[in-house]
Amino acid sequence: MEEITPYIHKVQYYETDRMGITHHSNYIRFMEEARIDYLTKLGYEYAKLEKMGIVSPVTKVECQYKVPTTFSDEIRIYILVEECSGIRMRFRYKMLNQRSVVVCTATSEHCFITQEGKIVRIDKDFPEFYGTLKAKTEEHSL
Image (cartoon, rainbow, N blue to C red; front, side, top):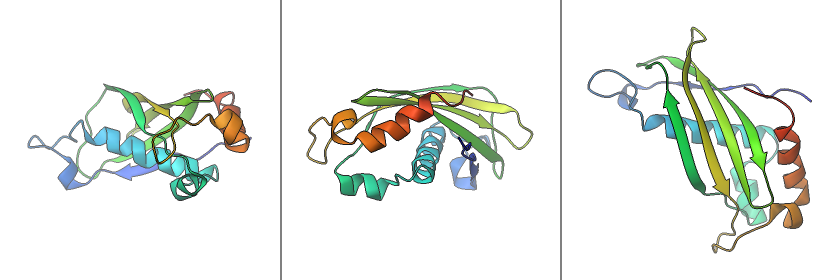
């Protein structure tokens, strides 16, 4: 299958702290931007998922910060679906700066619920979406 191009985020001045380094909390936002971009490239933009009745809140995040980034750095964010069951999924992220140095590695876990908060089993209720995600778990490694 075709590899999905990485998401690129250019660090903005307001994302840095007093020391001129990207504040650690922003990497979580970068992950969300990359995840939305990734799902869109798979054909499942968030608006479509919400129209289908699916929301996918974050249940866990882990980050390992390797090298700091600063204003105007470009961060390439590679993402893959590491695990997908009928009720949850885990994404893995690898972020590299413009010199191809790893600046952060991370994972995020998500569950599937309706907009009213009821748990959704995508393997049963949305098998096409589940199949797309499940296929991605076997494709690549970071």
